[in-house]
Length: 161
Image 1 (cartoon, rainbow, N blue to C red):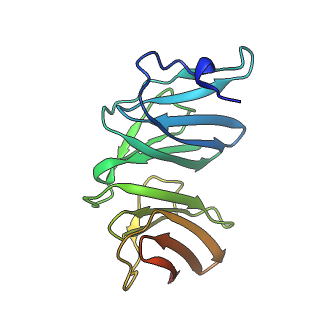
Image 2 (cartoon, rainbow, N blue to C red):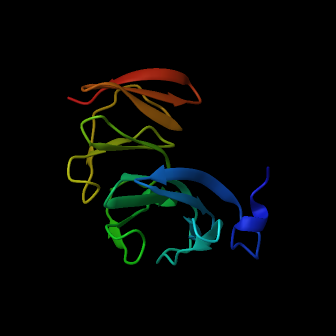
């Protein structure tokens, strides 16, 4: 069943991801759009962000919401979207995928093969030396030291050590 009538998106901007973070459900898209499900009204209400570019995805865990997108952009909120901090990634390309590992680390990947890991709930990210990775669009954890990344050149395994 389409949800368009339940999203406060009058300009019909493109929406790119839907994700549960903690007990909340979010949708993100172009022009900095972010929406959170209001369970009382069963509608996705707009959350203001300080960004006017495109968000490709959402990740995080209770107490740490991250939205990411074009040109290595990441914004983090520790209060469910009431306030935001820009997180520097050092990545010039779009961030296209993310996961939260079982140990709580947050992983982001870019369209040019960058793999970034945060050990501090998304306050900062460090690059992992991911050899021979050309592009990535999705990532998941295999075990505590290994990731699987998928991109246009297929699937690869990356060590987080």
